[in-house]
Image (tube, rainbow, N blue to C red; front, top):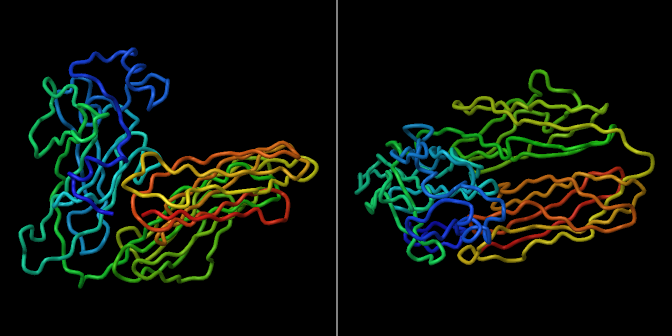
Length: 414
């Protein structure tokens, strides 16, 4: 759901960073008393004060920037904005707004949309409609990017209290002295949609198979989306030079046509023949003139199986049935209960995939373990949804038993 900047100030999606009084000294005692309850007991300076906007600890300049991947777009196509700056990693809160102050996307850390452990992060919005009459904004645009942080140094550093660049988080009493430092992106223009072009997007762009028994097969997938306004034609898919033939993929018959806004699935299988680590990539070639070939990296390790049978079955997949974006204070934390019905004392890779509105928004693989004859419960990394719509979850475990280790669930995001 898109909301204007003032509405975002009250958003519970911003986990409290710190609650320091003005001019509080930055030392471990303050972290222990003010931060550890939310951010854990490991003392860190990550994400505090103005670290997201300044080039170094002198805080004498603001180096927060937002740069678009092009300077002109066709209406309705994707605009990719890279937000850079800062000198500390961790606790990234970066937001992308359009000309009117409506939020388009945000990053809340490694598990969020466009997330990362530190700046830079890349967020994506949609080019606005072409305005034939020119309107008040016209067809030349400057969006804004913002970093959410602590304004402790606002009097002595390169912060500004101008309402055009700094928005204090006055509504959140836990976040005293926090707010958004914003800057404008470069200018870009929007052309009418009579110019047709496909745009290929892969999600995810890296597949990790973990450990797979020699002779067994691990399976991962990436969603190929067309965010352009013309048919995307996938003309070939091939292993990159130097990539082991232990990897195979589908589809193998071309061309494959993906309509604007549509998706198709790239499935990659890894069948190791020896106990080594195999890395490489799969190259996808299409009629996207700006990115004619894009790669999905792959990595996996073959292991020699023990005697007996590794049979890890899914007892239950647990995901929330319904969440409300405006009330969501913490990431969704999917979990599952398994039982080892086999005789091998060994872990197996479990892959959880979430698809929302036709797009894969979550894909995580973790190694799960239960001793033979016992049950165990494990959790996947948390996920913070950013849009409404039902998330369809699928859980698969790769082991040596021929039965289907598969479970499904749904979460309605409203």
